[in-house]
Length: 379
Image 1 (cartoon, rainbow, N blue to C red):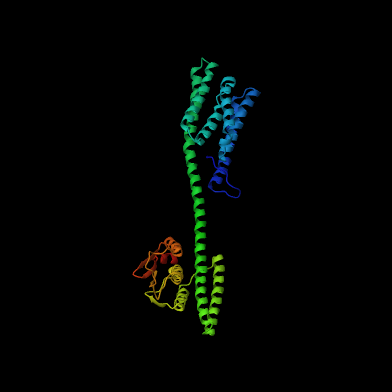
Image 2 (cartoon, rainbow, N blue to C red):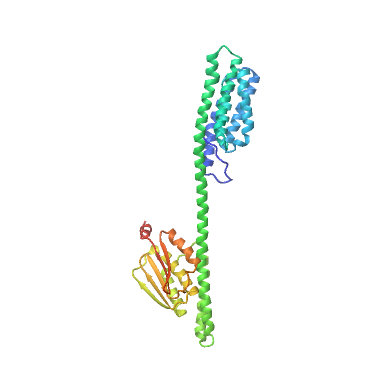
């Protein structure tokens, strides 16, 4: 058994299920035990009223304890059961009424924010002290009073307390696991939003830079070569239409990059910008790595067109890697490229490594992915 916090409507994690189990299994036992206390100890009608008050307070405490709200009713429930136990000892002569103070006190103390040890000792002393009041009524029956009103109630209370402390800790761990699961779900949502934003940046940012490049080229050609200028404008129109399609596919989680198409697109863009391109294929790229390497190529192409003053670009492909080298690096510290930073996180999330280096006027972007993805793809 354990207190279980109330859950929002429509949500029933492990704690909500445990709450139902607690109430279903143990509430009938508490009702039977409370009825037994009244039947065994009550000899007059007013005895039954006093004992029933303790039973009702105990049941209220249990129900609130099972739902995680015991501290809200702790004070009134404790006052009732704490009054009934000595009243039963002195006026009724029944020894079973300690049932209420034993359970309610043992349930409340582990919930306290501090001084739980002192409260536990005080509870045991109170139960024993209230039971010892029976000596005022039966001073001659030392053995009977000692056993029936002191040892048994005190021992049961101590055992109940001893069980409730580890029980509370166990369900604290359950609650912590539930919170950890919720935080992991929130992180997954955040990661997906970042991935979506990064993909949207890849699509829109790449297209805008290409459109800017082709528009400038069309402006130069409009007076000297009208047909070529029209061709550039048609390509701009087709590029924008393709970007709209890709954006829709991204929104519906249908977008997948094609490395071959990205290679051809990069070649055309570089040549249109007057950049010489050389592509080396050391091996066929593995299907499992194609999409991620295509993202690396697209982002790098955009960065070269936007930031570099390159005249040559060399693209090298292997089964699980790609490297792009251009000669347009400026003689300055390595610039901050946010797109590559986001891409580095994506590559690292897949177990790979993205390398960005600048030296001797050259800028290198390379990505390598572990071969283990091949096994994952075949499973």
